[in-house]
Length: 580
Image 1 (tube, rainbow, N blue to C red):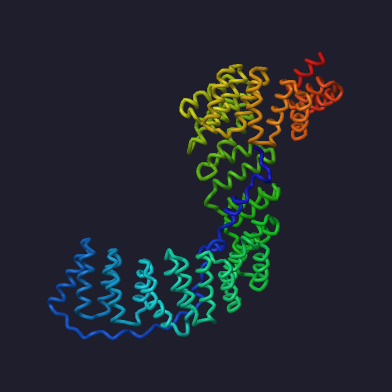
Image 2: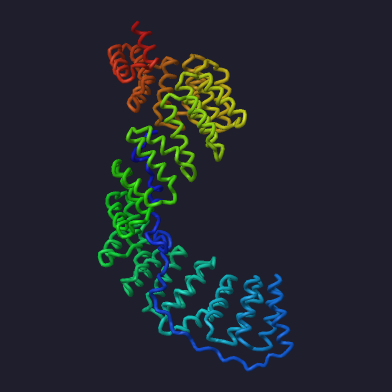
């Protein structure tokens, strides 16, 4: 399985390129977050008036009792004691303490009561409004939360944008996204010039599946604050799936004005990648890497793009750079270095890198490639032992390991040993269709037609849509000239399931030949040979042409096939039969 360009999947590249250049940078392709620090916070509100109280003995006793209860793991009791104290003292500080204790103890009813009391005693308290809003929203009580949210907005008459950015995370947790969007629409109506309000509305519309409304709000936010990166990010994200070229144009224009906007450049690079504009995407990643030269993830992304573009020498150098920068996931780098060196025919170097992959998502694939290269060196037993030491995570991987081992043995002309490997596998997984099918084919190769038919019929029983099983069973009967009608019925059923498969078309053509329908046979065999000039199809087509008195054409078909496949036994046998 030598590396080709198609072997580097787009999903792998996108995963490699998903890392932002800065530690605190969010992934713009999923949920661009507001850069709250850019919005000036409002000045602190005045402190509440506190009641003038004397610390009496009973009051001190309750304080101590509440603290001891909390320290001894009884937060529910502590919360109730503080709530009683807050009610009697009317002190907002005690109400706040009661609210915190109740919230930490998951006593939501007590917490709502305490926060409500705190807000009653200190109407300007933003923490009380925020927490009470959060609990009411979490409890699905949007209508009850609304006046408190309006209070939060009113607390920032000159900085309402900041307030909206604080409010939205509370509402975003609510499961009814339509209700949240409707509420935010109503809350934002008095603030048409707030870019943050439009941005929040766009996010809420997006969450509610209202793409067009989200786009409209994002564009309004961008028009009000064109320098604000997150508005461009959100608009581009909304365009990304259905109008990727518009998204690219938007980001390109923004980057021309703000070339140091790393998040926008990262999203631009990723969309270019999704559109398979690999060279252009690499340019953007290189620019990000230039700004952040120690970022190993960016270096790896650049290397993967070079690999996708077939620039193997450059990709190898860039992968080595990613290693030098200390990429945490070194196993992934070693795996792709192995793939790259294998593509360069440096099997020794590839094997060395595959052996270095000790963990992560590529460890299984790396071991398979290593086993293949060991086998390629002629070390059959070492390759088999390497497969035996490979840990499979599921039955599909266990079956794959057995199939590969059987193939190694078949390549070494040890068909009987290969058959035993699969039979032993069937003892543990008796109904696995892949094991059954391959074991059946080996049984046929060994001349055990009864075992072949028994296992192939079990494949059909386990997986009734297995077209290749119908074809193999039917062709075996036709080729042995036994139960021809049954064999023909089986290959025709396979042809109905997969009408364009050349091997199955060949079987149908061979069936018509066995039944004496030469003209129909030629029709199918010519179609099969046109789709795939396989030597066995050539052998069949030549034989039917010969029997149809088209001997010169038959000789040409055989001659052409023999040049391409000089060692094919089926081709040699049919030529010897008709041209001894």
